[in-house]
Length: 195
Image (cartoon, one colour):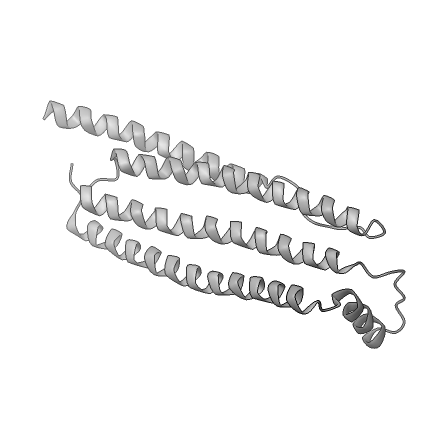
């Protein structure tokens, strides 16, 4: 059963929107990551005393607060590298989602049906990507939380090391949707073989 031309036009529009969002996020997120990496390199090359600078800022602007000891530069470098790693994983995940959605709409327009093998594969890969993203963010959070705690044992760090239940649920829902589409594809094949 072929889709109506009106719906196909809508899917073409959705494909273009997903592609534009993919490019915007890739460019802006990539520039932000490059700026963070460049800043980290500049700080490392110039041997800027971040710990001393932070301590002077705190005592200058908030003199009533006394801090026992500022962390070392290694602490701040680790914090920046952790933020860069988490940002890179998040950017890759979001870009992948938009590109996969764009490919999904393009395949629906090309085949004139949502119930196609390639569409089902794309949906399954999107669902699996939610699990991969959750695992990577858990590993990054746990690793950098442990490293920061070892560099500055006096501080307590509220780095999120929990598994995100929402992303796991989204992944499960998309995998369930892929199974529904797979069932729809088999029904469509049966229907076409009868006709």
